[in-house]
Image 1 (cartoon, rainbow, N blue to C red):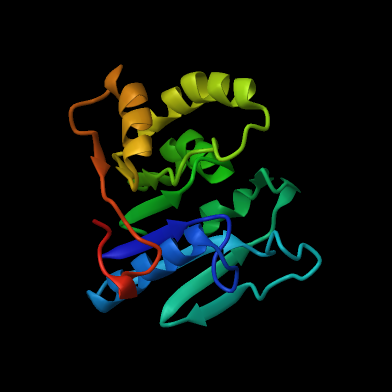
Image 2: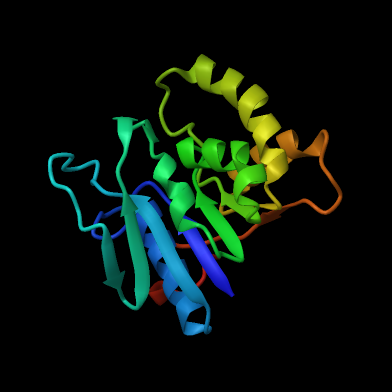
Length: 188
């Protein structure tokens, strides 16, 4: 299977999301899948440095796309060029990539799945606006995703609520508890 992971930040960036996507991609590669990661061309920790457009990290193809805008909502429409041919596109987080790939789903016609990784509720910044956006825009766009794969009970409960209304029966909400590193074993 050809799997394209789409995430704002990836190795060499350091963080929870970066580790989860890296470990998942390695496990899929080890299972015999063709895996690609599409990510931004700059790390949020050093916006001045532009990373190579293409890379191979642990046998995983990495493609980096330029972006405009803020770290909170980086705009990177070139993502569309790099998901062609994927059997599934796995979007990590609720951000521009989530919105844009849902809005362009009739153009790219790739099956979409999403892991919210907490959505955008990590800080109290613009909390009311985030809540309104979540219950309107995110609720509407999530219908284009074939699955929501949650990695916490909080995410599962949150996204189950907005998937209940208007959900097509072939859609699903799943919960997979995950740790930061597969090397430490499953979370109990």
